[in-house]
Image (cartoon, rainbow, N blue to C red):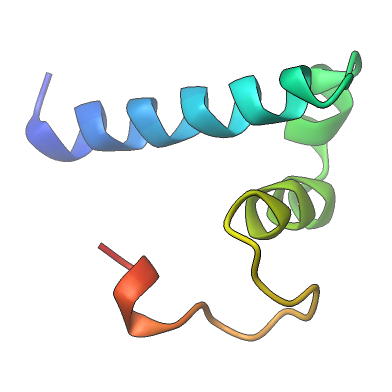
Length: 60
């Protein structure tokens, strides 16, 4: 598996674990809706709830 895929998989699993730790039980619905997935991801990083790109420090 290329390095970028491994990083993407780790990030995905971290977002999923965060969602489930907070009591989420409908992960399939989160992954089906990009807006909802983005909201969970931004909440995990404690970013504003808007759709602006994250700060440069979070893009790596």
